[in-house]
Amino acid sequence: MGKFKSALVLSGGAARGLAHIGTIAELDKYNIDFDVIVGTSMGSIIGALYALYRNPKKIYEYVYDYLNGEIFQRNWLPVQEEEASDSGAGFFHRFLINLQKSIYYTRSLTRLSLIAPENYEEMINAMFEDVMIEEMPVKYGAVAVDLITGEEVVICSGPLRKAIAASCAIPGVLPPIEIDGRMLVDGGGLDNLPIVPALELGGSFVVASDASWDIKDLELEVRCALDVVFRTNDITRLYLNEIRRSMADLLIEPRVGHIQWTEFGRMAEVVSEGRRAARMRLRSLRWKKLQYWFCTLGGMTARKIPKLPKNIVYL
Image (cartoon, rainbow, N blue to C red):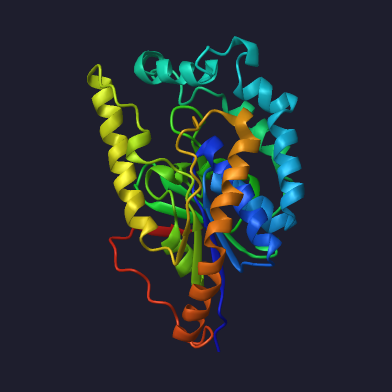
């Protein structure tokens, strides 16, 4: 006999993904629980912390302390806040733009990432204890992409630290992570809202929080060939994300597209938006969940997995 299982899916989005903390806090306030949690990139981090601690206030304090701690500041932010531009975008954001458009092509000839592997490992180890995914209190999956095969890889066993590192390995910025002979990077480029994996891991009803951006949030000015390349790539990612979003049983959409993905200093603002977005959807959540409970006879019948071209591997 099956069991009706609720699944929580959290998108990537770097600093924007901090909105998931607010979303979780609002859902937890009304005792809405989940049996399956799947995340990509920042979503994999917030999802793992929620699976481990089940305490939104603790998660907020934990992440806030980490982002303001010495290890993150030293490895992730090359200059202090006062060196930010008048526009408020911050030095690191401007640095990454220059990296994409010029420096990247020079440095990529000699190394795989901007941040060294040993520094990345230090950052991950400072955030998570050495636990196994199988020992976590709920079923959990972190989504990455295999650079060699192009497959979507859902890591739902083994060391949590390594799974998080793979799911968050922003191409060109953070180093690829090897797991079972696979070279893995950030899953957001292929599946930024991993709803199909959540269903295949047993979810009967999927609540998805999408903190990514919209087409209107992209840089409008196209000045050179590289602008054309990057914008085309972004449009492709957004199109893929729209397909994923349509599969959610309940979609929560924090309005954080105006936040630069490097603006971690705006955490309070982003988390507040996550709470607001979840609050707006609470009434729909209860009604839709009841509908799906009846449709699946309380979980006795399996959900139909959307028929899309899939190339998903589970580790």
